[in-house]
Length: 383
Image (tube, one colour):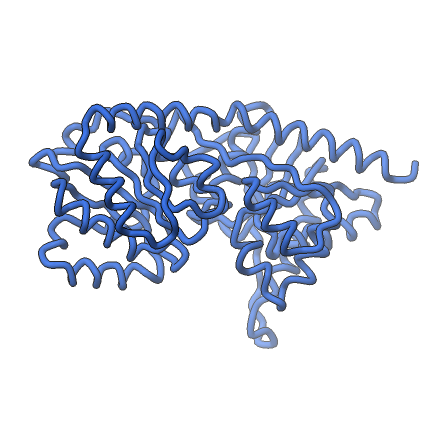
């Protein structure tokens, strides 16, 4: 198949999934065309002869306060389909990709080169931005015009169905993890640099937005550290980083045990020395960062919000608490890190659970979906 993938090229979960999916599809022999405004982060070091990147260029004119990216994106889609004879478009994150895909589809149908498009929902495109009255009518319309809609968790499907007037079923296809990449490696020298006295290493990774509750990460760690010698690695960057850094300064001497590492591409290197992962988010449509940690044999203490209970099994792979319950999360962390036998069992459980979400189990679901919508689209057109 010739597949067009439209996504954001950033570190966010939707861009990561889209890029990893494209790489996996290319490895199975499909031609994959990424269409976005810059090369996706995880594509930079992943050359494949059957992966193509098409940059969306948005000219700047004095007339526009905000350059019309959606129009430029639709035009680029049309150009790529015409030049490479694509079979299907797969757009990740509804805004503005689904409406741009609909626009492109209608243009292409005029020249009898129409093709189906699939919209994959990732979370904030539905739970936050999509609900805004500014966008909701267009988001709803473009989702309903999609040949198929997928969501990365059952929770996100339920959120979408309850918040929008959706006229078709939504297929749930979980996010996946590349276990060849995300696996624990021997990084003893690295661990000694971070924890020279054998302290436990705790990690958090996110885009440091309010929904991630990074202040709770610091508060949880402060309580754990009182009982268990430990270090905290904060991976990522975003608007709440400054507040989190200020909170670290507020707690006496905590700054010596907390490191803000900023954005990191090779997070599996850090996971190789990590004992516990914290994700106390107010909402996660799925929790890809938690899954990647689990693939490296790291137990997860998280909130029970959104799709997190679908991957993190309470009392087996980690623990779940209500959003904001810092005391309980800290207690779970202390209990786990204080018991080597229990910690070892949870690490094994996390590793095994993550292997239920491997690429080889998920990619065939997308391939089957592509074949289905391509056949249905062709059959729906007059001969």
